[in-house]
Amino acid sequence: KHGKVYLNLFGVKAEIETEKDVEDRKKEKCVAHLNNLDDKVIDELCRKLAVNYMLTLKSVKDCGTSEEIEEFEKQIPNKFVNREILKYITPQIIYIEPPLEDIPAYTLYCECDWEEEHGVNLIFKGDNILYFGDSCCTIGPWADAENYKYELGFLKDYLNDNNLVIENLNDIFTKISENYKVEWIKKSKNQFY
Image 1 (spheres, rainbow, N blue to C red):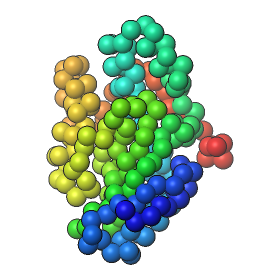
Image 2: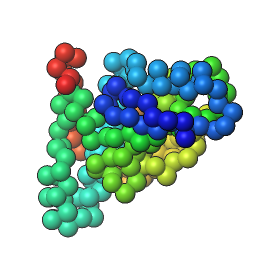
Image 3: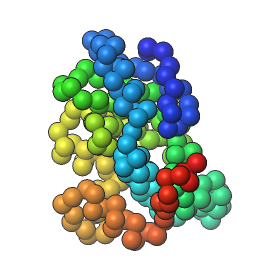
């Protein structure tokens, strides 16, 4: 552990953890990246978190009792306005592995209100969000692209359950949104908070 840093986007402090051969410059670069994400990256993050939420809601509706469903829906709205979904995510750890390239790459381990047991991991490599799922994923930001498709098991299950073959992971988000009607609404960036 290397102390805590404040994360502007989430309004909290998180621990920095690294392998021992990660230079201070690399740590600073990753924290600076996370604290200065482009609006497009933040919007994509919100969209992916909304997909993660939708699939959790679907699972609760498919397997839960009526009381569990009611409690789940009281706790978290099924409609997120602007970047409201970020209020339900609390980063705990920024984990930085030794760099293979000169770009910021890290895993953000978060507590998550709709997935209290597993939380949610966010894996960033530059401005790409490679993974956004439960904390069972341990592959980090330097794996081959194919590994992330398999690690996003909830999307794979969704595809199998619905007999869908989609080549591009980004197309999945549109399909899921169309099928489950949970909305994430983007308004002017002046109204985000």
